[in-house]
Length: 375
Image (cartoon, rainbow, N blue to C red; front, top):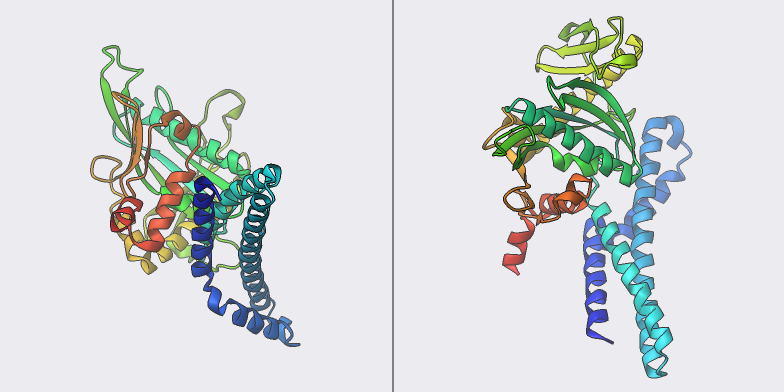
């Protein structure tokens, strides 16, 4: 077997090992048998919510087991084909099996990443908010660039993107925008993007062509579904209506249909500016519940909680990622040290590498560079 093929096999085996660890393979069959026994209980559906949760957990375990066994079997089959082809000096069989292994390596890596998305709300849809920081027009333009980046990323994933509200900048860009992004694992992927994003570039708004630094913040919250109950006391909220602002023309409302909800105990403010005031109330209330649920998640995780407590101003000291366009080109995540010189690709939505590095760090407690140093 060629050295290149041996390396591919080693990468697949490593992905299989990590998949096994994530699902606790040694006890998986016993847990499945327990699920099967509970499914056969005639009283199971006396509590429909509990029954549906049980069925989802069973299906998730079964899918994980089948994925693991499928990759393992494909790996074994193609290794045997290569060995057989080499014995019979059949280059065509060897080449075909090697191509299959290359595709299997990609599949195994994707499944390895998906296995990291096993948090309580990871599979949910998500709200994504972008706010410009200090810097006036520069930061507003940077906020609009970030909005475009995340919309491009979501579209590549096949997710549905809905603009919930938007406030235009005075000269260019946006002061803020809120989106709902719908699709399997939308929150699980995007949760790592919460924080302050820093841009360094030659400003297109500076006649002297000087280098400028701009900041914008991104905050991500899971959409609370029917499986997560969040109670909001009506006495704790204030609901205001106002006339929404937008790009102009047919998009400007002539009635006070936009809705702003303020949660007094926490200071959380959410808005929605669709055409219908009734729809806006519903959207804003869901967004508020998602924010409150995120606070609860934060309390369970000290690291996440610390990150949100330091949200503060979008400026120096709070950034999680730097996007440098001049004097050189580089995007670097300051948490994981993951970086790339393909700034255009990143701003066009190629973010999976950064998200994957953060997910892996959340599991291991170390950045990729630290893990490599240990090796």
